[in-house]
Amino acid sequence: MDLNEHLMISAAGSAAIAVGGGGWESALAFSIAGVFVDLDHFLDYWRETGFNLDLRRFFSYFSSGHPSKLYLILHAWEWCGLAFAAWALRQGPAWVCWGLLGWFQHLLLDQRFNRLHAMSYFFFFRARHRFHSRILYGKP
Image 1 (cartoon, rainbow, N blue to C red):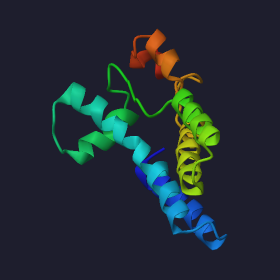
Image 2: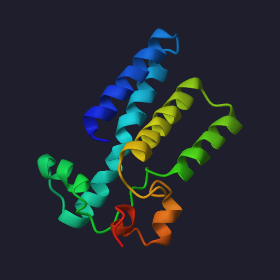
Image 3: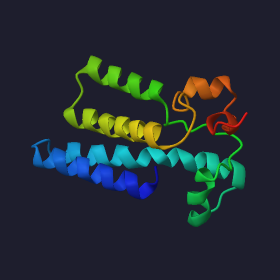
Image 4: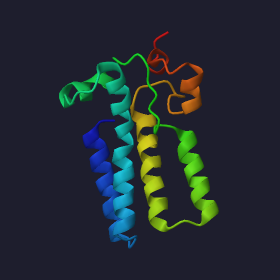
């Protein structure tokens, strides 16, 4: 999914949280996590292209299948699940849970709408394949 889609969906989710009485902290946490998960793309982009701020090139880089490797540290079901477990064990504040749900919905939407290998959003699957993007993009 692209940035605009994540922004719109996260904003709608945040509005629903705020209107439903979840509080501004929870609504903000949902949106921030729902969008800023994608910051990990910059690490992969800069690793391969060098540091630059060419946003037009950045936004087309991943959809065109250019990267040779994809680490995408935050795009991992394992970390999201561990974070939920840690939150539940500590009985953390509600806004943290809403932030984790924002992260979860981001992964869920990416999993559904990005045309990648079904296991692409599992960090250990990517690690097992040495993070080679050809596996994720379905290229042998």
